[in-house]
Image 1: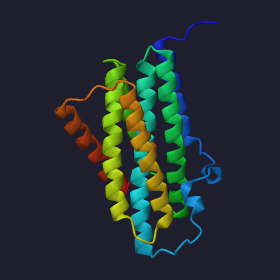
Image 2: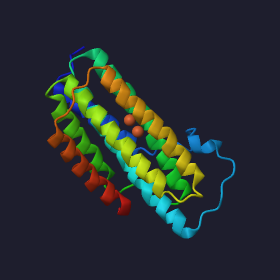
Image 3: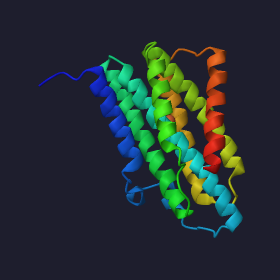
Image 4: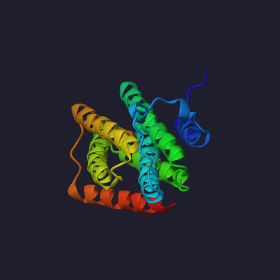
Length: 213
Ligand SMILES: [Fe+2]
Ligand SMILES: [Fe+2]
């Protein structure tokens, strides 16, 4: 059996990611925190539209998370760390499916630019990973901190009657905070301030764009 070289690994990661994006998952079958909400208040058309836009942004964020983790996992030489990144990507896959299912219920669609968010994030993940695993963990830690802040804003913006989306975001917030802690426990380096500012700027482009398309 021949050993896989880095091009094989890269292609296999892109393949996995694109499958996650385009082979329609059976997200209806995935159990979601929203399933526990039994009192589903009917939303006004306006509330529905706002919720769908916010959930499309969160769905795009989860696509980006897939890309980042896959990008980091391509670059690490340490098998146990590779395993950690893959496991995290799998956990983020559940978030992706919850958002997709909710978007479906709100009769709306994921961002048309999903492949751009995925491939762009994967490139960023791989570029950071080239500096070493502790920078990758530093990047994960900072990303998750920013995601928690972003989710807090969305929890305030969500229509108050949209309890299902709220339950999803609350559970995601809990998981993202845990991903930050895990990255810190793995020896994450603290990123320099200009890198953090750049990350905020890049994520703003994604969140503002995917709100609309
Ligand atoms: Fe997530
Ligand atoms: Fe996360």
